[in-house]
Length: 67
Image 1 (tube, rainbow, N blue to C red):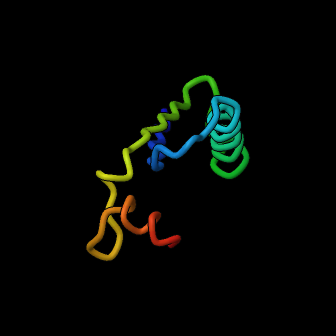
Image 2 (image 1 turned 90 degrees about the vertical axis):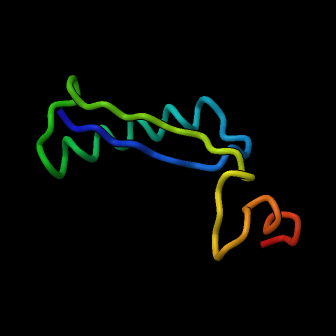
């Protein structure tokens, strides 16, 4: 039973985009590793940009500078 955890920043990802990620990852596991889609679990965690850091800075601050 594959378990995939996708972590993304909470920045307006739509339900449709999340659905596409879930189905795409499930299909990829089936195609590449011959895993059963019926037992494949995909979880998407959305993290506030204040709680996500890159290069020692919060993503929120980087976004305000256009990075």
